[in-house]
Image (cartoon, rainbow, N blue to C red; front, top):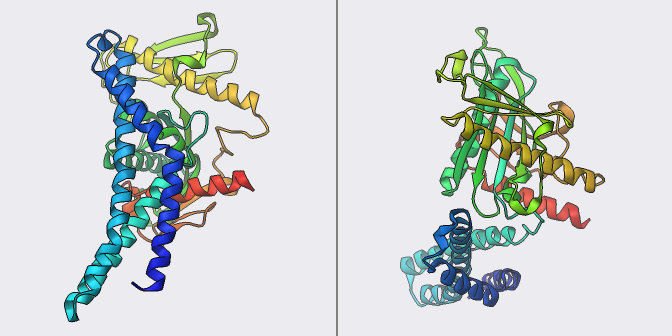
Length: 371
């Protein structure tokens, strides 16, 4: 085996060993056994919310254990692949070595992705994520851009089999969205997607300009952790103003013949949330309360850790604080302005190919915290 190959395998072994220590496979196996016993209890589903938490945690733990043990097995098999290839001659040797190199590159990517997950150790990182997208400067193009971003995140979630629940979509008059709020459900979704917070900038030839001019538009992405019962976010009904109205679709077209949409205003803070995607007023109010609680949790954390501004980031829709730039004209590029990570295939990114940006962002955040 070539010395550089052995050096790379040793590096992969070191990284994977660190991942195994962080995950504590012995403790993870014990936890899986405990959860399997709970899941087998016929009384479990008497409390559906608790049952869903147990089964979700069990599925996640089993998946993590399978992934890391599979990585170790692949790493153990790699030296054998190289030995078998080196025992061949001519084209068979060349093909065998190429296959081994390809597996090594694939394994490195998978181990590094697993390593990134071990960096998600924040207080709220393990929770579902609540994503809010708002159109910014740029008129109808910005509204269209907000809708494109929503599709991008939903496609990313679908690629990874994460659940998505849309709470509210406020359509702009001509095209696109004024705002949208949705939850992405899966293990460590907040820790994963919180790196996406900030201003996203799009440069393209506007499809809404009959002169075909280039347009720059902005949209703001906010990511919050979904509130759990342990957070003790109590909302006094006297502090709430509840308005109901008729749900509407694109262009103001009515999609509901009853006043089922709900707008909640938290008077002390001035926070306003809406929900119109459920069929009944009660369902919309429950969903809106979830969003309001998440926003109030953010306020609470900002008060407790104002110097860190832990949850919300810079905010705003201006040139000065944009976090990612998507250029479709005059060249093709998506670039994260914090990490310098970039790709030349905006179509793939807008279709949900975000893993590279998310992984580099999490590493950047970790390095920034350590510096």
